[in-house]
Image (tube, rainbow, N blue to C red; front, side, top):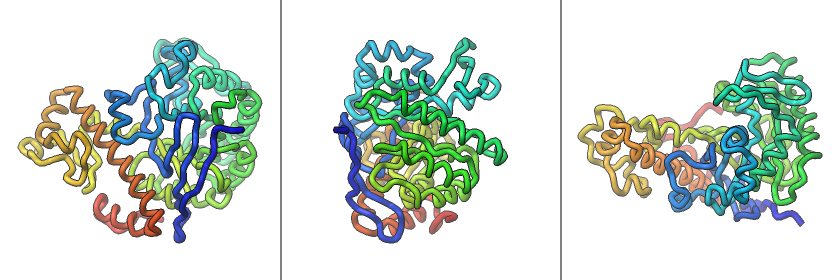
Length: 376
């Protein structure tokens, strides 16, 4: 019997938004959920205890980076990713496909897989569907991604179709190579920005989805209205009884628009990346604390937030830390930004339960963006 299952607890009557719970071997995940990214088995600057205290339910790590350093064999010898990073909650690993295809001239795609040069030392490596499954088995995450080809935004229809067909052939090889029943394999829907390819992709991908399906190749530079159109096209074809994961999305509008279109899981490096640059997401919009206007501003970062950062420190102090390149600045802003997105999806879950998701979304947009809505 599978250790994974998904329950839908509530549905919004006006939209595709759903409230659910995803049961995994390392705990339940309340959905919709945002998942912080720990690329190299750590969320930059944050202790696992801090990540848990702020309400994180599931973490991501990256197959490509862990394969290169310290090596998936080291993670396996340590007892798997949970013991290695001292995290007892669920973990998801991507396949490394996006990272490999982002290498541009440093990689060569064939039917067998992708030959690439390490961005660290230039050494040559080969990722095949079978090898990626082996690496992800070694890492030992609860949820693992199939190896796919993420075609670039702007690719013509023929290239996008060829990449999609290769992704589907690789998916079949991943499915045959996946042998660990304690890990759930998520297939990934590709198809670039072509409606016919997206429909073809989801229909061909669904048979491989046992308890979870991912949407890849979006939020890669396309206009927001194009991404929303692709999600609209896909929505009628998703399996009902499993979580849907939109990969690489972390802005509040993308998360809420995704939830409205039936997506349950989101991840992105955005909250910690912009934190290191001195930017915070607040209930009144973005705040760039490194700016001079906050030099003598002794008010909290966000008066509507009760995270450790907002309870204890002023914008002036945060600006001082960031401008002095003090690690604590990145840590405090990361705590706040992750808390902000976790609260966003928590409030979305409550709104779905209460049957007022669209009202919640409209009020959030009015406060955060200063407008009623975004392009549908």
